[in-house]
Length: 496
Ligand SMILES: *Cc1c(COP(=O)(O)O)cnc(C)c1O
Image (tube, rainbow, N blue to C red; front, side):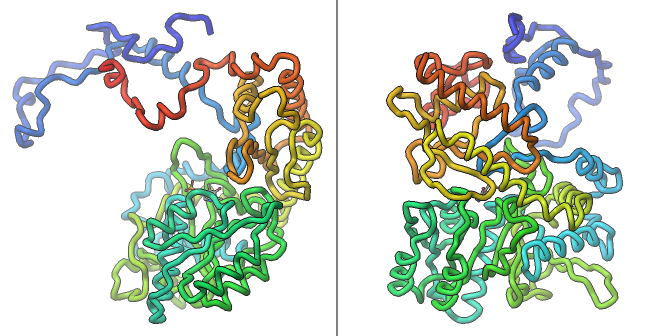
């Protein structure tokens, strides 16, 4: 937009004395009415922007136009499952009786919110083939930590506290080793084969060397390359034989929904991301939800508060350790992010048993379609049927010097959100595309045509691609500087 007010900060639009509304002067007696200690009181007025109401309204409306979401366009961000979140789920979650219930109210004996909790945890147990779920964790990584704490508590309860190591494939999502470290466990890396699947002979070596110290192995299946581990049953059997438990990173359950279940593959503990597969919009940090399921025999370790259902079907929330002595304890306030739980249940119920079965196969079909259409211009390092996402190793022709970063930036000019880039780390120029089940063939074809066009531009005008984006409010930012010296407030930026 060619408008000199557009793109400015609200502080830059400020004029001393401008007002959006006029408040009545408070009686003098109200001014000093405070019991706060003097050192907590500010000594100078806050620096607030002073603008008229229309300027404020336009400013924030314009800012919202700079945003990009699934409802704006195709968003093939691999491993993130940026799929369409049906409006009905938002509407259900916004119903007054749900949205206005205080979390403390929902802790009351037989509160209807508790029945929703139970209905959702039973649906997830059925979808994953596990025994019981807690819905308390508020993110995928939070679920990983919860699951690992359960595993550690299980080993300690058996008097086997020497199990302090966690096996994690080198293709794993970064949160896996991070969660293990936060849980006080040591990460041991399992190598991948050139085709991206787990090197089972390396796993065997590790198990024979340190098997008695292994608390668990964490696995993502399909892995972060979108490839289903063909030897998963073999792997879970081997780890079990060594006394370790199997942890399933089900953040990307979308690929398997309705097709197969972690419980049937031999996993003992699993988390799923409701904000990826089950209809909660994500990005920008939440709110999310990472429920954790366990197989039979591990239920006693689930966190507090714990929702108990008695023989008559009445619900009660247990919060005290004496009532659940083996529980790992509380991992957060109340019973998790209720709004997200309601959206997930609404999503599951609105699709129903039959429609849910189509999610995984359609997500897989779309990813394979994109893979086959792009394989002539982009380098396909693993040439086999993928699941919900496909990974390229940059452009096939590397001679132009156009990188995956350049392709991603150029896509912005064409109105697409970039795919995930430089992850997984197994390739130098990873470009990870996850179309999800919701996209029409027309949408996929239009994206494929643009990807071919960018490959052509890389030949005819590589400089233009290397300097993209050309149409966004800002061009390329210095990633390293932004990470090392983040300037997060306007006032701080003026100090420089
Ligand atoms: C997204 C993701 C996670 C982490 O989930 P958060 O909610 O972002 O903490 C873990 N593992 C995989 C494979 C993921 O894609």
